[in-house]
Structures are given as structure tokens and as C-alpha cells.
Image 1 (cartoon, rainbow, N blue to C red):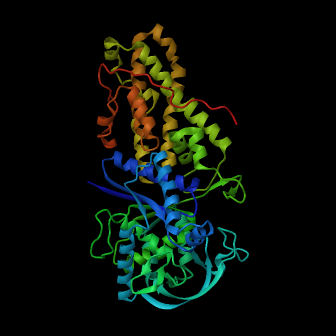
Image 2 (cartoon, helix red, strand yellow):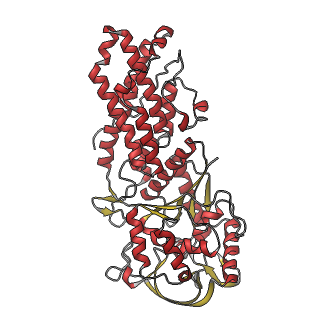
Image 3 (cartoon, one colour):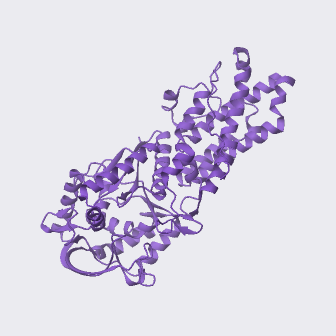
Length: 507
């Protein structure tokens, strides 16, 4: 059985989940569900990053202990993943004892090997990014991500010999042995490498909220060195470099563009130093913008994920976010755009098509008519579904998930157009036999639409199948590779259900 391992970043628990977090996680969930549809052995990892100076300061500011603070925020992530029907196999927290021990074991290995050494670091540090910055990274002397001046830091710490792995990494990235997609981000990384990789601080002396170094208890692990190892510890890795987890390497790390450089320098350099395989691919997506501006609490343009779920429901929220932009690009969004798209694509589109077809079928079905339904000659006149399914699979393999989702709308529009063209509602009285044959073909297409919706909106797929009288548990045991037209059984029974997507009033 083919293995597929996908990860999101582990999210920093300085605040509750925002729209960027849920976008990455819904995208990862969609991809994981697709690979399960193929019958592959899938492992989907997400979680929370819970150490560092920023967490320590925030907890102190509100009068809580760091562990109490991170427990509360991590619980909010887990709650909203449940609300969004996220199918992760594991939710890892970096304050787990097993993770802490594995980090200490692996760093001890690197220290004994000579890849970590004691030195002094002098430079600029952005507390919000939890990253060290070069002067050239700044805009008007400020961190471009957080618009604050980084702190000048000079302290004794342990450094990681990242520079020793520059040439190997550069070659691996150029040759796509470590694939970075979309290509524009590969080019950005190659440009970044032209300046050379420098050794990086791997510990902090004055930060108490972190993993203590096993050989020097006066220092705690730099938060990124701690966090990256979750991709291995989430699989049960204990820090022993001789024991590679069964599901490693990751097929794809999904990340936002703000953490591209560290994921393509520090993390793969750590893996090379640990003599472990690199992930196969790092896929980078953009930001959500509101009227051209990045969402920010200070600007007051933040869209709360809970508001989306409350307004549109879980399934529509998943649809609206994935369809908002080409996967990998930035997207300008607002509630008005979401409302229009909901009504156009879901209420008046998919939902209306399902309702029209099921309503017609529920009025005419009986054993005699069901036998007449069994004729798929009309299918290619409606939509070339086999060709669309091939395109759908290719789009998923290329991680063009928004285009795969758009194919659902393509099928919906072709069905609506065909129904109008043949005036199907009139055929029921004029030519009942032809009416039944066309209707049967439309029901077969609804069955395929269910499969196409499954990774994006699983509950909607189940509702469509239920109305077709399909046993969902048995259906989910099938592989997409074996799905074909002419699936519906003779004498199947339509079970008309509730409206899938009620129309919304304009804002």
C-alpha cells in the first residue's frame, strides 16, 4: 500500500486560530482525504508550537503560568478543527513529554557529533517572528511581517553549523530532490542561498520557557529547532537517528510563505545533520488580504473563523476558503465576496442541481421506471465525466486543489445547461421513456459529484449519496480509481433530503 504523509505547520499559540490557520489546515485535510480515497495509507499531522520567549511574556502579562496559557490556546485549535471536520491522525503539542525527550536526544546527538558548538551571538531578533534577522531583511529598520524594530541581542548560546550543509542543500533544491512549489518560491529560495547560509543560534540563555539542553541546563532550545522536530516526533520518533519512522519522509509540508526560508534552510540542514531523509516537497501558499491589506488586529480587518462557520456552516466554509484563490497565491477576501460565491456556487449551483434532479426522480420512481433508467447512452451529451475525472485526479496530484474543486462547478453548470436545453420538465409528459433515460444519467452524474465533493465537503458528499439510496459505509470502502459510471443499482430508491445550501440574503 502506498504511503502518504502530509503536515501543516504547528501553529504558534500566541493567540486563537485565525483564517490563515484554518485555510492551511482545510487544504491539508482536503489533500489527505483525497489520498485516502485512492486507498493509500495516509498520515495527517497538525498541532501547536508552545515554547519561546513570546509565549513566556504573554503568559506573564495576563498573570498565568506558561503551561496554563498554552493549554487554553491549544484547546481552541483542537476545538475548531473538530468544528471544521478536520481528519488529522495526530495533533501534536511541543510541551508533550515524549516530544521534549526526543528533542533532547536529537540535539545531544548533534552536539556529540560536533554540529552544535558554544559561541556568542550578536544580532537582531524579532520576538514576534521568533527569528533572527539580517539588516537586509528589514524594511525601514523594521521586521516586514510585524512592522516592529527587532531587538539587538548579544548572548552566549549554542550554534548549529548550518553553513556546513549549504552546498548539499543548494544542489538538492536545484535538482528538485527537495521540491519547493510553486516555482516562484523555489526561485526565491535560490536567491536567498546566493548570500550564503550562516550558522544559526540553537539555544537561548535567558528564555526559561523552553526545552532545556541536556548537556547545559542554563540554556533552552531555540524555538524553531524544537518546533521542526514535531514532523518526526508526531510519528512517534524518539530521537534515535537509527530508527526512521515508517511514514517518513513527508510527501508534502504545507506552509505559509512567511516561514519559507526557515523551512528550506534550518529544517533540511537539521535532517542532513541527523542523517535522515528530506521531505519530498514543501508547498507554499499565500496570505488572505482584505482590500489589499494583510489581516491585522490593529487595522481591524480580521475575519474570525467562528464567524465564517456561523454564517455559512462547516461545509460551505471549507468550500469558500479553498475556492477563494489559486492554491499558492494571495487572495483578497471579504464577507460580501463570500456571500456572493456561496449563493452562486452552492445555493443556486450545486445545491439547486441536486434538489432539481432528486425532486424529479422522487416523483417517478417505481420498479418499472427504474429499469428504464438503466441506460447511459445520453451521458456524454451531458458531460464527458470520464475526462473530467482524469483531469480531477491530475489536479490533485499537482496540488492544484482549487482547480479540482472548480471541476465540480463545471459539471454542475453543464448539467444545468443540458436540463434547460432539453426542457427536461416537459419531457415527463411528452416522452416519458426519454425523460427516464436522461434522469438516470443525471443521477449517475450526481453519484460522481458526490465522489468529487468528498475531500472538500465530506458531509455534503454523504448527503448526496444518501438521497441516492447509497450505503455510505460501503461506498467509503471503495477506491476512487475503481469508480465508474453505471454504478447505481436497479430498483434503487431515492430518499429526498433537506436543502443542502439555503440561500443567503445579500449583505
